[in-house]
Image (cartoon, rainbow, N blue to C red; front, side, top):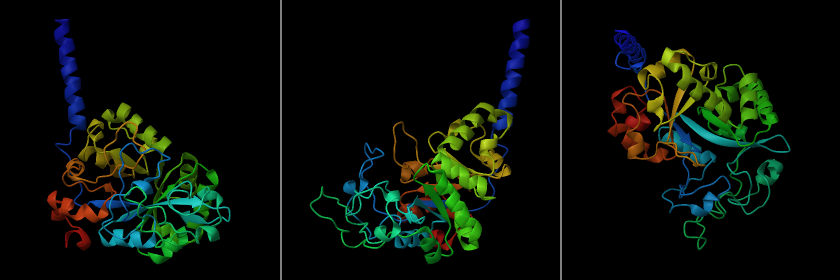
Length: 337
């Protein structure tokens, strides 16, 4: 008799857990999918066995367009192709300028050597950021000479693309970078309007978020805290503090583990003031920034998903958006027109 009572309680608990977290009774808001273009429109590279210090410019795939990452032209091309947000990388230089450039050092993409954040902005302005790109092991360099003077400052990006919105990536762990960005955003209304959010190094990201009211952002530390605590407690409907008023990055291949995925999870995050960013499949040891970049990855995006989708190939996005039926909802003409 006791085992029957225990079994009944167990079944009731399972039923309550399922009812509390199933998305069968939830719906996404009927709002458009939004797209983050990582580094703008840029040159692709062979990502096999990429590590943090790998020179990706030397692994470039044969170019199919003329745009380089983190340049104003590449960002404009991304917006023209349908991006809602462009991700860019910043380094605070000794003369307190935010240089928009990906690499920690200059050795890979430019003709110079040295640490990016230790180089004054006037020197960075003289460099050819297309110098190191090669798709044939160094026999030819198709962008050499074409990238001179193309490394912008963050205010220059904002001024050149006044209607754009940007996700700012801190490449360092220097708290002063977060403080400097906060000063810029709090003193320049145009810059604040352009800053969609921040992410990256723990210290600058968390400092910027703390200093700028309403600025969403996540560090590795806060993202892990959010997702792990939600895995532990989300069954109850509880949204951990680290998941509130922020951006919640979700690897597409692990999203099914999240309580209430997809509709109920998304709605819980929205109710907590957060946006969900669906990133590419996570693989152990991956040092790159995986995106929703091919057919298989796009098939992991839930139908009707109104959150943010991260991609490295904004120029290839439209066919997948149309194939998955996202154009059936209100959308932007540059993608669905």
